[in-house]
Image (cartoon, rainbow, N blue to C red; front, side, top):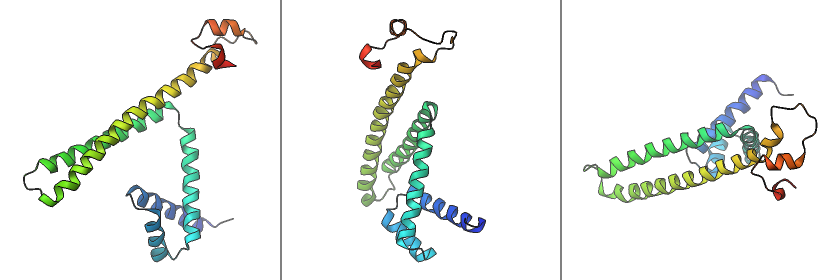
Length: 165
């Protein structure tokens, strides 16, 4: 069992790793930073990274479709804001000519990411909705009878027989 102080240190390290990942640093760079700043071994760093990924997987599995929709909306809004900022810098006459090419590439990448997010977000929501549609007939609020006849369920839903069996 770890002491509360050790547990707090581990939590702080993991938060710092998350922050550096969010800034876009590679795991190699973060591992070097941790070795220099905290004197942690490479193995320890990758153990923290493994724990972070496990925690993220648990959180991702726990999200329902409202949260997924919210996450997609937040991401879309943030990317749109970044795009507007990049576009305003591109259109600014005081922008250095050497900065224009990377800014144009950034704007292009943001637009492509927004399109992918829109398309994949719709696909994710369709998959979630189809999964809900498959189980919805079995989750009726009228559970007076113990047994549901499969033919009545099939006639009251949009499911095909091969979707159920």
